[in-house]
Amino acid sequence: MTDHLETLPRMRRTSTTLADGRELIYFDDSEPYRSGAKNREVIDERPLGARPAAGTMRLDALTGEWASIADHRQDRTFLPPADECPLCPTGGGTMPSEIPAHEYDVVVFENRFPSFATESTAAEPTAAGSVANPMLAHAPALGRCEVVCFTSDHGASFSSLSVARARTVVDVWVDRTRELSALDAVEYVFCFENRGQEIGVTLHHPHGQIYAYPFVPARTASLLRQATEHHQRTGRLLGADLLAAELDAGSRVVVRGTHWTAYVPYAARWPVEVHLVPNRDVPDLVALDDAERDELAEVYLDLLRRLDRYYEGSDGSPIAMPYIAGWHQAPVRQGRDVSRLHLQVMSVLRAPGRLKFLAGSESGVGAWINDVSPEAVAARLREVG
Ligand SMILES: [Zn+2]
Image 1 (cartoon, rainbow, N blue to C red):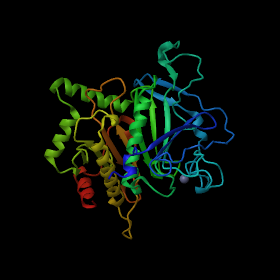
Image 2 (image 1 turned 90 degrees about the vertical axis):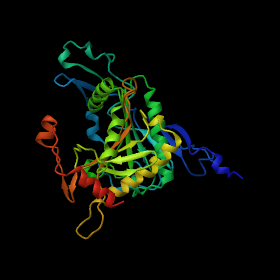
Image 3 (image 1 turned 30 degrees about the vertical axis):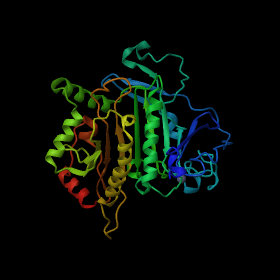
Image 4 (image 1 turned 60 degrees about the vertical axis):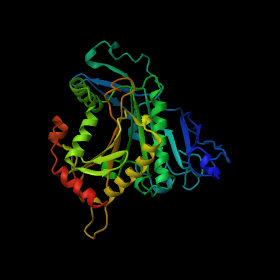
């Protein structure tokens, strides 16, 4: 009775190498590659130079925070015309793209202009304190930066993907979190998407990114400090107590599923901000079970489609929401027992055609002022469901 395709794995993974040695991985969720009826055998024939080595990161002695100095990124591709898109399949446009195949489902590859890379040309080891003056400490920016192409369709967006494709992307985030966490230098894996020119996107093709950092980033460290303190005081998880409080209040809850809940945070910083959290205590994407991954694909698409209906132009047509979406998960080696996975989606669009700028108070001292009430944002997101 069992259909042949249903007994197959959900997707097939093929790791290949680009002309400069960077890794590219195909995640195929459709035929003929999913079943293995056909194999990926395409070769990147571009004359590329050496793969990029790691740049440098410098320690800001005033804050104790690392800054990556990646000046080679100034030369990266900026809003190319559609027929020169480096994320479309090769063959359709006027030049070979980053993806040598003529078609693909989901593809991940190492960024050609990375802020963090696996190999360093620096003479010194990673010891940040090994410089003559500890006020001017630095280290190689070891780690890895990857690009995730959600679809070969240049004009699509994450919100227009099928549930099956979104589910593949969930599996890809899990795969990449697991593999990148195993790299010696990596302390934190961040899966995120920047969508829309208002956010500073340099390529229109629907894609996300994954940064594997050699340190715990500043905001993550701040979340971890709060969670650790709460756990020491109460013996409970901060994320779980917060979810319970939001459910109790109810006014900011947007979606309540069997496995996931979306709510506008009580002290939202951004004009539009939503958190999507698992109902079960889960430290990272890898720890999600199959039922949670299935529902995540559905709930996340629902949320993104609500965001795309949130604002209307003067003629009543919906305005695609520019957003940043990022997964906060447990660091690789610390605080795993107090961390709780959540997705943060945020937008700078405070009204059609009007952006919130991170100006004096936010950029200068990190004190956020939000002109929009979180309860009103939640009400609107419920209304457009
Ligand atoms: Zn494209």
